[in-house]
Image (tube, rainbow, N blue to C red; front, side, top):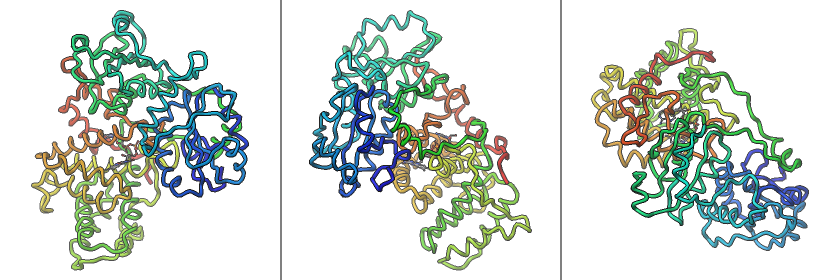
Length: 529
Ligand code: FAD
């Protein structure tokens, strides 16, 4: 590692193999492997790297069953090894069975041009199921479907954990993916059943496949209500159940690899914090980043960008639930922009105004980034995007609880005002372009339906949950803070209800919860300067 390959050990979620480690890793391994032999010199390998990283992140939870590796055949230290493996073109994707002694003989994946994550995941599952019973990886949970006759057993036996039963068609992989996703979690068992006989499905109120039925530890049961019947939705729902936790991993790994992998990882010790609270340190750090870093990448503001910037500053000056010194700073900036006759401003002038030289007159915004509720277990995780969401939610809540705050701004009668202005900020300035594109799509689809300021609070909550569902298991997910449908029952039990046995949100309660959670009364000032 570190010789300039496309993947970095300890940073990317893949196992970076080399001539000196590949044999030890594959020979007699208790898990199967999927290895990409690539060349760092080949352009399409580089273009493909993000997909491979995404795949590895996506199936990281499957590691006890199957691991994802890479070996750089473009590195001269690996030339001989790649020859031994008979690699002729890049990238070559090769599967290796668990407990293989013939560590060079694997099975190539001939996926043709179809290099979709889904195809890889499905081929991985097929490969795992093709292991003989004796040579199955011990860390691989049973993937075979359960006989429907066994179902009554689960209702009769009182077991101290949840049981999820996924009903699906024969050609569906959702059940197996969810089983693997949850295989390292305790207090839950996931099974799958194939039976599309309508009479049988009717017994469980199932109207579409795949669907999942959940039996709680106390014996109660019902269908799971998810936004979409997708693997990510089922998995994140099940992971968020109270008491369902990731088991501490004890999987034996070949030692040289373990070292290479862990060498560069910086796992930070987490600060003490309360997840039911809102921390001013997150809001102020986010505001600092937004005003002094993100916006500052635009040297001059004019036209639509200038308009968006002015509107955002108006929102912040009126609605940011800040301390007096920060509010004074925002108000000063706001007044300056309102009085400015220019249709083009150099951002340096803004930075000048935001500099803390006015501290003496009581204007001050920290320049120290301090994440608390947004802290990640690694430096590159969470942080700013998390604080941006929190700021955005807090603004919609403030607009709903104190409608007079926007008087004389031109937005007082527009229930979509906060959403529209922030949408434009995301479009014009938010650093993550894919985020902006996704957010635009969601806005286009349904922002028009928002008719009240309470509706705006709920719209943003709902869309944030759509994003959470989409990103569950993604590379950007911090394993210490999995993406779940929020608020989870432990912080808002009344937000969850059952309608005809189905889990559903109680939106009246959710709205109240959001107003409390993102309201002034819930802010803690620990860790602020
Ligand atoms: P975040 O999702 O950032 O949530 C922060 C906090 O908000 C949580 O800790 C929780 O306290 C609270 N929260 C969670 N869900 C809700 C909810 N439904 N309603 C109210 N509060 C909630 N990343 C991508 O990789 N791809 C994308 O397309 C993408 N789109 C994004 C679009 C926007 C507008 C934003 C602001 C961010 C986007 N991101 C995207 C980043 C991603 O959503 C997360 O912000 C980032 O991965 C950090 O995640 P996190 O675990 O800190 O939780």
